[in-house]
Image (cartoon, rainbow, N blue to C red; front, side, top):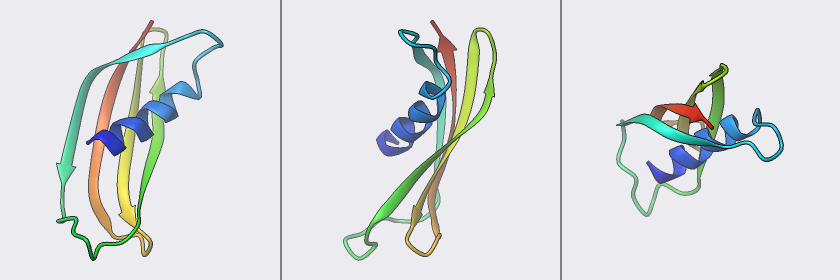
Length: 80
């Protein structure tokens, strides 16, 4: 969840004005595959879905080098 929260937060941050900020209102994570020592390197991908005046939403994916999905998430952020 921490990796996905960071990736989604970075996606939202790209649309904030200088000095602007946000905070998470809600987050949902789905774990779809076990992560083990043999899994190897994972990549957290954050994608902005919507930015409004007061609320932003984003989604995230946690994938291995072959693109296999390990977890996915969504977040809703309050723009401060």
